[in-house]
Image 1 (tube, rainbow, N blue to C red):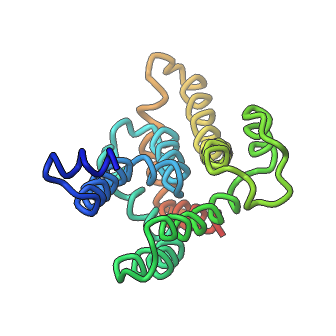
Image 2: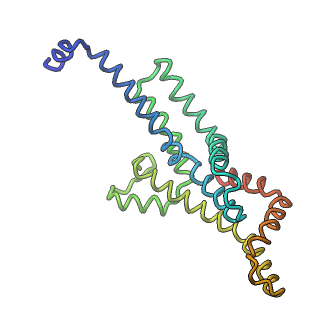
Image 3: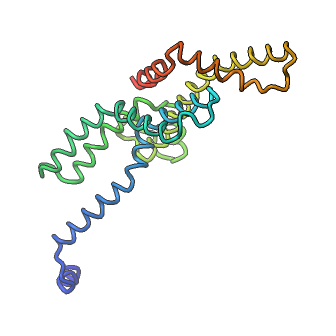
Length: 223
């Protein structure tokens, strides 16, 4: 009663207040969208691996940062397309059509993302955050809190990305060692090996169709 009288005195009613709160909640979700995209999708693995590619080549700022991030975004949308379609079909479209409530839409949208993260998360990493959170050991995946699943998923993605980065560095490292040995044998120790090895790295990368191999391996790693 007191709350209703306060609203009436200020020229607002509960319906208007709820509409205002929905708008504020929508704006909050939009502001968190970048963090959601980075932490709950394939973006982390993709952008880290592409960063390792540039470092392994030793090409400094080529390709430039904005190009690498842009490519990572589009690859993320490609990988997450089935999940996005499921969220749109089961949560967004019914909510916009006033068929389900906002709470139900949130639960239906969360489920596909959780399934994707569970598929990419190692049990060891999940167990680590379950023990740190001091939660009761869940019997089913549905009992795992989302706030525990997200950091476990991010750690697993970083581990996978670093493993792929290590495999990327190996052939270029061998090439660096060969160039360094040749320069030392020729007595050209003052010449930086990177100056000579960079063109050979680029040639090797082009000859083996490096972008196709890397992008193909990245996409298949989420299968």
